Length: 257
Ligand SMILES: O=C(O)CCC(=O)C(=O)O
Image (cartoon, rainbow, N blue to C red; front, side, top):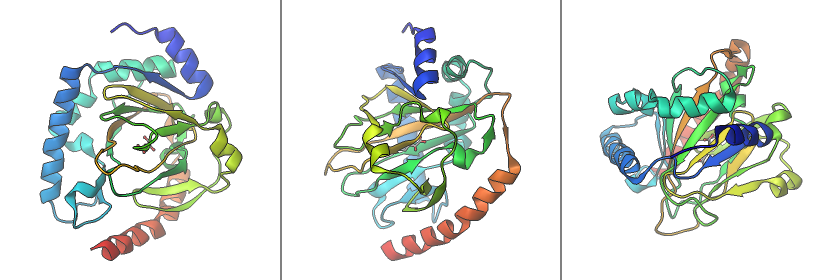
C-alpha cells in the first residue's frame, strides 16, 4: 500500500486526527485478531485481573477493555514493528519511541457504554504534547456500534479541565463539555483494518453500541516522540484525582457481581 505521507501529516497536524483506510490487509488483520482472541480467552480464566474491564463480571462477552496488551510476547514484538512506528513518526514529524502501551477497546452489544469526551494527554501528561494513538479498527465502527468522534483542531487549544467520569474504564471526562462541542464533533466510521489516528490532545468520544449482535473492537497503540517527557508532578496529581474513581470502579464491579 502506498501512502501519501505528506498529505496525511498535513491533515493530522491541522485537524488532530487522520484515517488510513486498509492499513492492515486481511492476512495481517486475521493474525492480530487470532492473537487477541487467544489473549481474551486467557484473560477470562484469570481471577480479578485488574487490567480487564467487564461490563458484567458474570458475562465474559461483556469484556469492554483490556489494558497492558504489550506484556504479551506476541504483541510486545508486534508493537515494535516499524510499520506502526514509521506511521507515528511521519505524522508527528519526529523520531518516536516504540509503542508505549497497547489497549483493546471494545463495545460489546447489549451494554450501552459510551466513551466520554476526553483528551488523552490529561492522563499521559506529556510535555511537549507530541504523542498520538493509532486506533486499529477490528470491526465495523459506525453510528450503531459507536464510532469515534473528534473535534477538528482541538489538539491546538490546550487541555480542558477534566472531572471524574462515571464510566467504567474511562476515569475522566471534560468538565465543561458543551452542546456546541458535541455538534462540532466529526464522526469517523471505520472498517476492519482501517487505522484511525488521533493526537494526544484531540478531544474525542464515542457513542454506545446500540446493536444486539455486533462488537465494536479496536486495538489502540500509543506513541510519543523521543523529545517529550512525562511531567511527573502533573501525572501524580492526575493519579491522586483518579483514586476515588478506582474505589468507585471496585464498588461498581461489586454491584454487577
Ligand atoms: O475506543 C473507544 O471508544 C475509545 C478510544 C480512546 O479513547 C482512545 O483510543 O484514546
